[in-house]
Image 1: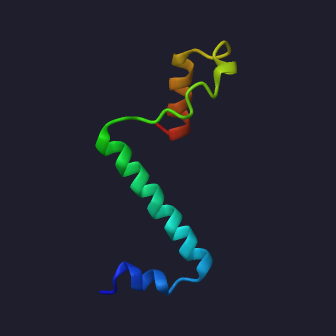
Image 2 (image 1 turned 120 degrees about the vertical axis):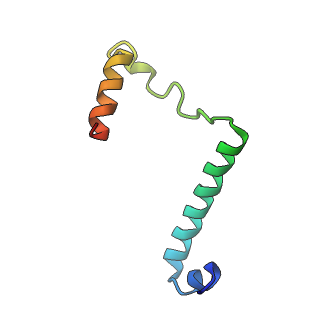
Length: 68
């Protein structure tokens, strides 16, 4: 079975970069879970909509989007 490095070496440079980005994403996600601290960088991003929707309406919309 080929190693990850051997498989990556077979990819063209643009796909190698995409694979690198994905691995960095996985590492970041794993690190966030391990230390138990959530990064709420998005917090406040929808501030202008808070008077338009209730939390219950948003819960229902989220379920709709997920197909539940």
